[in-house]
Image (cartoon, rainbow, N blue to C red; front, side):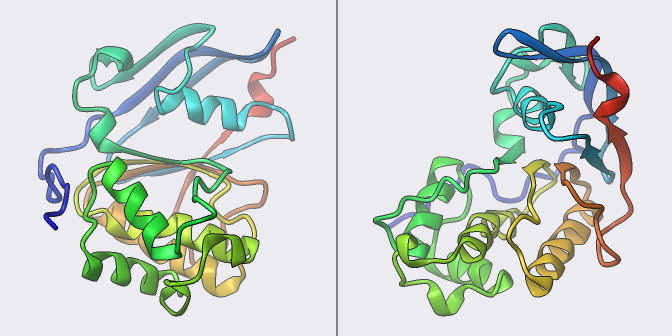
Length: 224
């Protein structure tokens, strides 16, 4: 079966994701106001803040999955909603792992790869699972995996990336042991080295093996 991949080796420079005076709402409540960010190629940002401050909401906004209450979100010089190449050049992995319980681990990863136009051939999938220490569980049903194993399987999507893209990661270290954290950090280093960019949330500070990150503390932008 032919792999459904648009272009696995994007070479054009990655545009900057810009948030300008952004306010973010969840339900009837405005969480933050006046958020500014310039997320450039080759750089990573740690998004932090108290529980309920709006980290997930801001990541969804940056991914084009929600709209700002006010302010502007740009991809290069283009409003995000009108940027034709944004969807193919961003990877969003939410706190939910988005894995189908009735599929095997490798089938679930293949489904996500096809959905997002990434390499979905067997060698690529197995290599990705190996990077996250999950190859031995590739044929296990997702429903039988531990929470940490599910997180590893979801994050294996990152090992399928070949070009420079924007990674938006909601609590990527959640439920991971030390080996899992190091595997993710290695992928982050490689990604930044090829000109990608990363905006991630985490309730704990990235560890010693993580790449250098700027900090965006949403507590400083709390709405009154």
